[in-house]
Length: 315
Image (tube, rainbow, N blue to C red; front, side):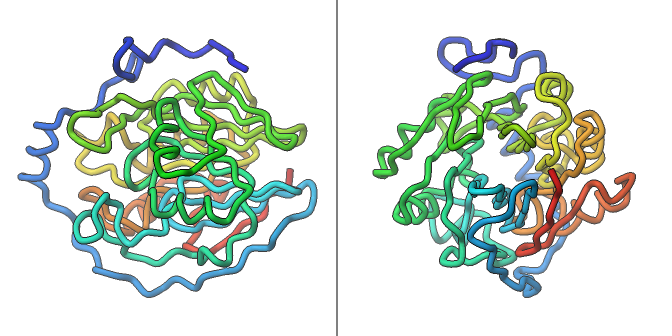
């Protein structure tokens, strides 16, 4: 089922951000790394008390558990959903190099309830982690929903029940409708595949609630488009981390104050911060994004959950 209300974002070979800045080039990335001054952060922080979520929740309730980074468990009556899952020690294709975990997951893999749907927003290693996806696939019953072009990678790992969605396309599962919506970002798992697959957010809708998972995104007009199409979400999961230096990161990642603006434009009943606190992917310190968000948010409707912490949101 498709709704072509979003702007064109594919030129026949590669995807792009319509009417918005594109991600910086590979050479710009080298310049950033050569001139980078990352804020010092502890090598590992021992402050996570893993929790055990219930297998299911009551009707008229949304239960949200922060696992880590952009991995969030969202539970509705008879429906458990997981976003961009990563339990690996590194956000990397290699076990010995790449961004290393600074905090442990807030839920152990073996303590997860049955997962009905896994949402994958794009193919970066901190969002599409193959070792984790293979583990989830062995548990059975999960449907994997991925951005356009990403299904081939999962199927190459014998991960089945995979559905690809483009912006404006939808999938109905178990009384819920999953809508693929725009994000402003980019994709790549190597040097030669840049923007060959799509990046996106998702709106998960049923008769009583709207949940918005933004994926990775910079600030843009898509928040107003999503609010106009689906109404104010009961819950929005918004990224706040990996935003410094702004000259390099602003086309692809929001700063905390931009996330607050997005929360207000969406008119979300509750927003929860993600994409922070577990991996240090940019120059901002491991806990700087949450400190900045606390300083600029207007009220407690924009929550910061520790790894393993949960919140209950009425429908």
